[in-house]
Image 1: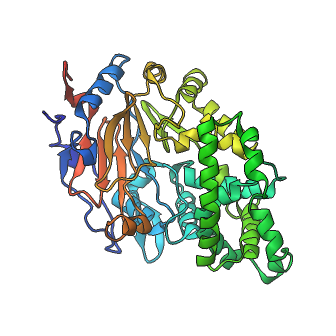
Image 2: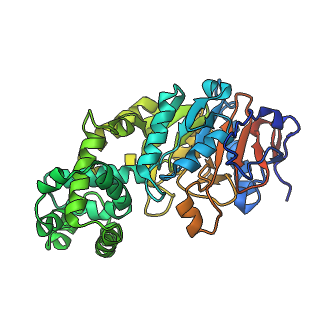
Length: 445
């Protein structure tokens, strides 16, 4: 089968200069190839991509950003992978511990696709690096990821009045945030703080759901979950209770220390004058630039309707409103589905109707993170909608588990000319995609 064709002869001139003063980057390509959409590592279904392009073309030409956009997603608590990606994209220069914007970085828009937290070596170092980037004056748009919301939901559930729908959420969400709690315990929790914390048994009782929770939960959850979803939640919680206790022990945290660190997280992240309050207060759930919709995971029909009828601000407003209300209702609803979906049967549906609404509104491609890849970015059709998967596995913990070397680096660059470039240290060429110059069956643009 023929591959998507396109002219890459002038594409190399698109890449801005890279200033790798620390000589940290290895394997970042400067040579180009036409995006190999038909290869599994870069897409996998050329016919489906062509069909998505044809459907989108029925509603007019692409509307490209007025200046370059750099998309970096899923740094997962690895500040080095995050900053190396920005260096590789020509956005920043790192020298002698200082971070400065390049001339390209001063003109580009940076979209962080979510999941700044969990997995990597240091959550706080990652947040400090992100704050340093923001303070540089860069035009940055921060999106929510499911791992970011995990912390928010866990600490809100622990500090709200207990109810059947919330008392399990700290354990349900909390195992993966335990490394962050350990960091907070080390950096912020004082001996005086611990002296005010109840005894170990009391803290355990506050952290774990009550003995009668599993019997009461199905009836309370019925308005939000299917029977299959309820049963899945019960199975997960049974497993996660054991994992939570084991993980806390491996992090050398008592339940008193877990509880103290969680309370301090509430102050740091959710109280207006907290040191990291900016992280959630500046976070959106979607961003639109021309024909491109940026979101962590994907979209469903309900959010397509809200987006197309009321605009991007309405979606982000609803996200902020619901995030402050009942944590369980929020996490199981359509707004949080934007950061969780993988278009599985258990996820909220994206149908032809939703895709048609997006196309009619001029949205032709969703740029997402959430699905990590081992050989750079992928372009593929999901439920008839063109998607670009931009998670290139940056954090060293995931890379070690998945057989990838060292620390990752990569970014997706989108230019006003309609050129899309995928850079990754795990792929030998820069992938080049230009929809309006690519051909597909029945059309030769």
